[in-house]
Amino acid sequence: MVEPAYPAARAAAPAVEAFLRRHLEEEAARGELHLAPPPDAAAIEGIIDAAFWASLRREEGSPPRISLAFVPPDGDHPLAFARPLPLDPNRLAKLAPAVEHPGIHLGIWRGPDGLDVWGATASIPNGCLVVEVVRPGLLVVKHRRAEASAKFGNVAVLEGDRVRFVDEAGASLPDCPPLLESLLGFDAPASWGESTNVLVRLAVAMRQHGRGGSLLTVPTGGEAWRESIVRPVSYPVAPPYTALAEGLAGLRAGDLSAHGVIFRAVETIAGLTAVDGATIMNGRYELLAFGAKIGRRRGGAPVERVTVTEPVIGDVPEVLAPSEIGGTRHLSAAQFVQDQHDALALVASQDGRFTVFAWSPCEDRVHAHRVDVLLI
Image (cartoon, rainbow, N blue to C red; front, side, top):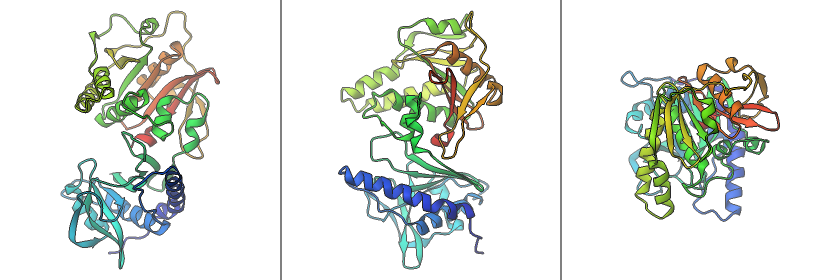
């Protein structure tokens, strides 16, 4: 049975093609090697279409999670099928259990009769198109960034008939927090020592555990943040948990084993954010407390209005009451940032939404950046 065309695939393909070609040309001009071949709109549409219909299938009762990469079978150690398979939703769903591990992609390339699945690979070139099936009806179009990064860059998110394109100019807006800049791929960190890279890893891990959570980052050495925390703190950490800071220092010194230390520390801290209350970390990535209750600073005004934006093309900023953007976690985070202008609050919702709260001097109010479109 031939599936009907997925209209969002055709709508998105030309813009995705233009995005990838522009980025590949920019990387080539900078002398970047090993760039991916650019897909045309027809190939992009075909991959998105097959991925969408595959996402609605179930294999042994489970919806598929698949990553499709447009790449020829000539990378490092590809797992090539003896005979390529047609790009078909049923076949993709059946192959999904074998390639669910992160970092494994089904390789898609042009065959004599159309697009084929030639095998699987863990190695893809810079600028490569990747289409990931997240859950039924939800796809993310990505590209492999040329610079060192913890995460691929998101180009577009397709959910049913809704298509959202990431706004590359979002990081150039006034008061844009460094975390958002890193997620968008601008001023990308050159090493693990960059704070935005660490916060991106923490944000991804917080979102993945699916329980919701709050992480507050406060200035190193300062004590003013304690004025916005209800005492006694449920779970103070003494001495501070320094594994993440020590792992970063080790990596800067050339100790490659520090990657494992950093990974475990990120998972540990992200897990603590699932405990009721907020997790608190300073600018040196030292964990100070978790399960902390946020309270309004003495003499401080209650937060009443928050600017809300999403880094997608066509987004219009809204000014809303905190109760309109989330529950208690969101209200507490907004209040904390209003009282502590040098702090940053990261809030994960159980439904997958992720919001970064930062103080905006230009607007003289708290700014809530909804960034889940960048973290999927």
